[in-house]
Length: 320
Image 1 (spheres, rainbow, N blue to C red):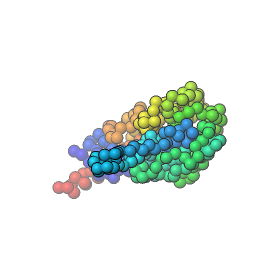
Image 2 (cartoon, rainbow, N blue to C red):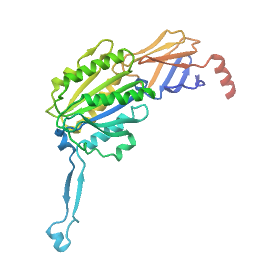
Image 3 (cartoon, rainbow, N blue to C red):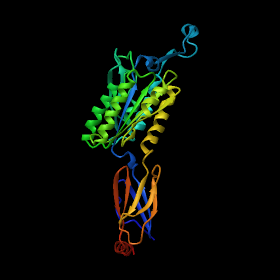
Image 4 (cartoon, rainbow, N blue to C red):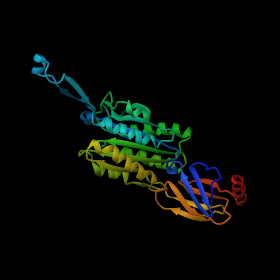
């Protein structure tokens, strides 16, 4: 006989108990709870062609001009190659963000490549209207630390509003000109996380095209920090059209790589371990008379009460 008389608490949306077997459905993935996301698109001059719209002329011609035969002349505007990918990433990343909005900006802008041009704090719904036509001032150099400082300033403000972890996605198509400064910046951030000044941050670097120096990205991303492990991860997309799908896979992999979870009973005894990504539905057995279970994931604990035997019988009698 099934009993579902305890109200689920977050992150659970449904609770089903039959004898000592529990089935609990997750409302959302707690491994990304409190996550705040930012997306930085390369604004350097080498991206100019990717941001350029093209125009396709159709119809018209001499027969149309003389006799009105054929198709009426028109010009179709074809979006640049970045825009569809940026919109796709915006929709996907907004679904992971704690308030459904993420900071989107161009980096490596201006003559010195040190400017950051903010697009805005955008939600998934904005993906249908926002234009990604590139920055006002394309950069002459690809300098990353100003974008990282911009992210950290933004994230610091979000932590004060309740963010509990951060994810910064950076797209680049060329060599990074301040790679050593990026490594120094990363060590300082790792020290800040270790000292408790910042919660966990994951930095995702996606290179596009054949000009990207993969060995440089590996040098940045493979560094490990005491008590933190890796801050960075990276991948290379051969073409801009592959970027969005690659980012989605990388975010999923990064945010759940050390996730897993543990279920304990009301006495603190482990009843189930999940080594990898948590499934949407958790199923496990609890000892007879157990009054609650606790899911521990990512250093946080979520305790869900279970119906007591007396409550179950009272509920059953009420249905007869």
